Length: 566
Image (spheres, helix red, strand yellow):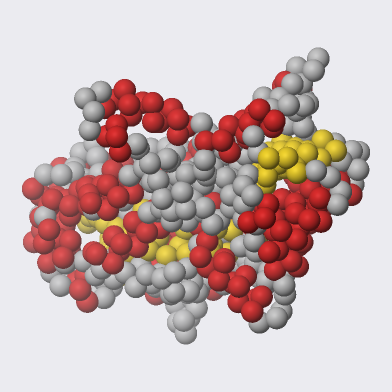
């Protein structure tokens, strides 16, 4: 696993290393600048050859100090460098001031005035070292305009699209809150807030704010990736530069995520090359029980379906649960849909469930150790009675684990008593709309446009929701966040090299619910089941490629697990 850090945690790590005497601030700054240069050459190998032109925009803090190091190192390779500073050089932090002075021995530093920045030829590389992880407010408009002025410089007789132009940001693009992934917006002018023409003024404010969003092609962060890099969708590539504080821990078998509520973790496993080692989910399941005694040793999952014409979602979930390793999977079917389901299944079992009394009777079978309710269930009274049977029969409060998905989430949101019956054996898997129905006040906080940082993030929202309801919450999306009521949190983002836009297809969420249910049946705890299922879900989509439909996901599991050495 890979730890994701908040801005405050990163500052704490650096300060602790400096205070211990293990490293100086100047050494960290030098390593950061060298890491940026190497990352630029790895991302754009052609820049390694020959001398190019770069513009470096430096801010008033240590991020600007890193920028001075980058300028000096590129100058040493024969590049033509222009450096601009926002702020007063005499007020720079000590280490940044030292690197400012070192650069001044090689070249000039111009004030970051838009008209001055706009002069000259467009560079091959623009370095955004204005504001980094310490930013807590919207960037000044002049900084954003200076950034755009570099992009809009004269390209001579060359067509703009034919002249390479690369932008690299240090730690995070200026203006982005590293704890939430949001770009911080300027505060709405108070004097305009109560005027009659609010809509027009608001349009002006948004237009002004949009000029402050600083685009980038590559972000080079230091030591660890930050939480905000994986929340929301970002168009930039991301690289990590080591600065001597310890390498990233990305060993694929490290699945015990820290319970520190201040740490989020990214599910980002890199299997060892060469194979030969069996890794999860199967080696997580070796808990003293022989692996091949009987199908019931691998668990029995029950997945409830909806009525006629609505059973496909549950069948997708059931197929996912079976493929991921549940020993048996039974579909609980209303009489009206019995023939529809029976004609579509082979390896799956079928059990007729007329009403909540029939469900309670079925749940007397203690061998059923995992449930999934919600996919295609419907929102009628009969569906609500089934949810109540699961929640009210005492089973959830004892040992049986349940995934509440889709319609079951809406039914829980309708009755406060249902939410109160949840505990840590339950998994809720909402998308954005379902999350808003379950936790409307938390959702409103998440949707608010931030003008200060650290901004309220999806990590914050999911943690708060899990703590409130006492269950595991898997908040779906390209930036899936999984939180335990005790504060443990994982971020699983299908981003950067793992981006899979074709996973946005009908039924994919039902398969994910089935993956979780199957792992619960196999014996994994709910948090680990969600983490492993989310990772495998994306891996299956990556293995298939574009053109994916939901039915393909379970069928890719054998290949994915085989490639992992399972």
